[in-house]
Image (tube, rainbow, N blue to C red):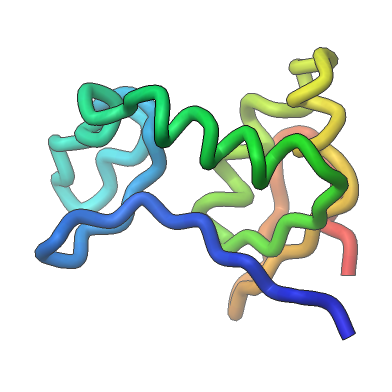
Length: 105
């Protein structure tokens, strides 16, 4: 059996959003995207590196998959290779993307 490790960016009042920019996900009128970036420090960098520097699979929700699919397939560096394959998507709807690359199951 494998471990499931969750990495989330979450505020004390329960807002979960990746460390992207303000335009990353403005759905529902959310205008605070990128809120966590000013709080990144060496400790967080080391913590993220410890998790991301080893082989991993991604389990993404539909919304996150759509955001990833529009950006990560074009990234071919070491981080991009790690994030791009393999990945799975959990969704009640069809997570079709402009890349034409279906999620792995």
